[in-house]
Each structure stands twice: as C-alpha cells, then as structure tokens.
Amino acid sequence: MTLANVPIMLEKVRKEDIDKQILRFGILAELDAINLYEQMANMTENKHLKMVLLDIAKEEKEHVGEFQYLLLKLDKQQQEELEDGKKEVQELLGE
Image (cartoon, rainbow, N blue to C red):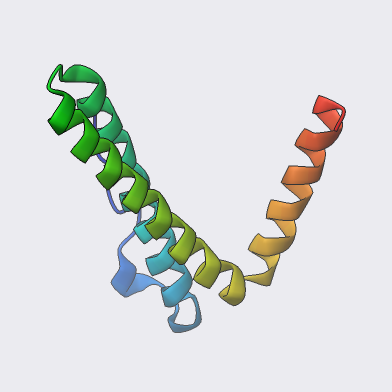
C-alpha cells in the first residue's frame, strides 16, 4: 500500500483556497489511515490487535466526516456536486 502524497505545494495555493486544500489533504490522509488499519486488521490473527486496529479505523472515519463537514461549509460548489453525484447513483440504482 502506498500512502498519498500532497499533490500540490500548499505554499503556492491562492490564499482564498488554502483552507479547502488543507481539508482535502486531511481527508486523503485519513482515508489512507483507514485503508492501512483495515488492511492490517485483515492480516492479523490476533483478535485483540484486530479489535484495536478496527476501532482506530472507525475513529479515522469520524475524522473524515469532520473534515468533510468543514470543507462543505467552505466550498458550496463541492457541496452541490456531492449532491448531484448522490442523485446520479440513486437513479442508476433505481432508488
């Protein structure tokens, strides 16, 4: 597994966009952590270690939600596109 790299140099981002970019990178980092902990949990046969790893992965999922909430408050276009994407999938699934 490869962890995500910061895709841009944050010091070169426009001042009005820096917080959105920080939040997006925070989301990437948390998703990497979730993947890492869940993969390690699947590899171990130690039930206590598995339980702890999955609990930590769950906490990282909460962090994604925290970052996403802030991002959607700052980026209304992101919020609109997220809703549009949800509607498209619901239509595809017949929901």
